[in-house]
Length: 329
Image 1 (cartoon, rainbow, N blue to C red):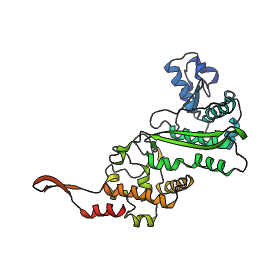
Image 2: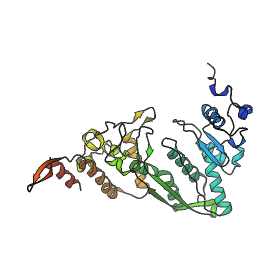
Image 3: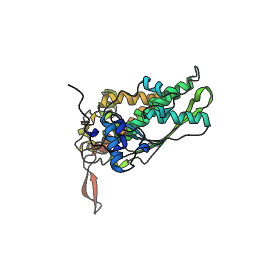
Image 4: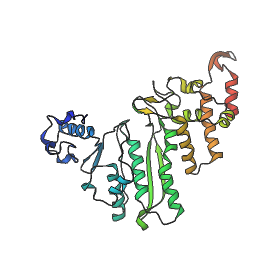
């Protein structure tokens, strides 16, 4: 069978008649700058898997909610050192312009990624990091440069484990904002020498009250489904999230819907690797997971109304639960 006809290619505004397959790559060239023309142009491109579109120097991204084969080394080399306006719009183009301007003008550069939940902000940030790590200077055999690049590429799973969650709109929604700063030495093609991550506005209420049909932060489910019997025994944990009120209250413990499936055990392994990459090793990891386990046990403490010294008060209904929290801590 032939390729399905694009329904958006019929009766389109004249703004993109001459480029019917991919619409207009830079929407400042639309003959009519109005909502209908802009939206139809984005539809045409999206239908043909052209998810990136320029508005001058601003890149508009339409999340396809599936993986496209446009992020490999072939595409990286295509944009490296190129005049990006001669190439199709791409997230690599944004990263290329920022990196080259930093080298040429010796000025700090900033890329702002914004959008509603599920728009693809987290994935866009990952692709920018991947591109920068690939094209920046190597520093010869400088291990410090290699270490910084490893952190750029591998730190994200740890951030996502403790800061991301499944919502009704997004299986991997960042519940916090982050400012990622990478410091470069301009010599040798711009070698990365260090960096800093500032997190802000973490949705702390999700720890105790996830929304209906949503999950709490990924780390809780990863820890329980890790298969690490040593940690489970040490912290009195089971492998069933429904055993803990914090996670059971929404009834959603598995991510497997139209947005894709998440393998909590596999992502646990990625989280551990990420923590080790940023020099958080076993002893510190254990202290970290001790706190996570204590939060889970704390959620199982129930209080009942009682008379305390002649006044209305409350007491813990099951002392063993309280002792369990104390033992973990």
